[in-house]
Length: 237
Image (tube, rainbow, N blue to C red; front, side, top):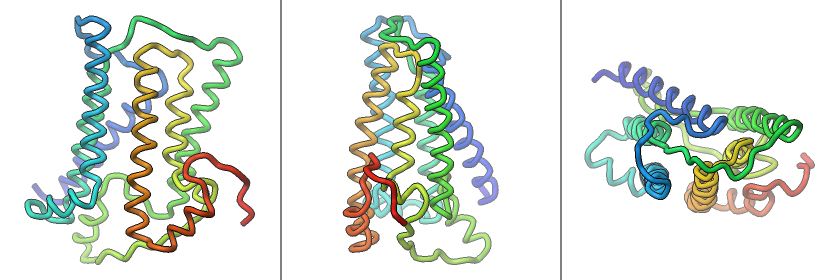
């Protein structure tokens, strides 16, 4: 498999999975594959689909997995492997997620519009957060692209700007707002919201440890000055 084909395939699969997840978070279960199982079994399947994604995503993103997998795969391909694996796990969740027949709450009229505005603003918030990063490698292809151009990777530096002056993890904050702004709260949607919010919080704590190891004292100072997920004040600079 050539590097160029791998780049195209990874970008395609990553884009499809992200679009599918955006639709899923906006309208709820797509009911693409409806299994003839009871409510409890359906919720159990949903839990397995979510936990499977959590284990894959959080496990493969750790430096320990990167060191272990380096025995079998070149370092430059590890980002693409992560994206392909995450995309497959995410698509499996969207396709096989089972919709509950019970609706707990449904917003109407003005409240429904407010929740839709929150969703749209959260999407723009994600874009703002991505732009604040300066350089962004959503599909883990930078190492392959650098190797095809004969370039070498530059050391990571801590840069705080834009959305990252408000909270340390704006992308996670806006994603949480996205999933909770769905106007129709079915039992399976509540299950999704709770599971994914819990995973994001736990994942954020684990990521903080990696960032301290990567940036050292600079990140420790950043932790003191800027809250993790919930903004407390308007940045003064």
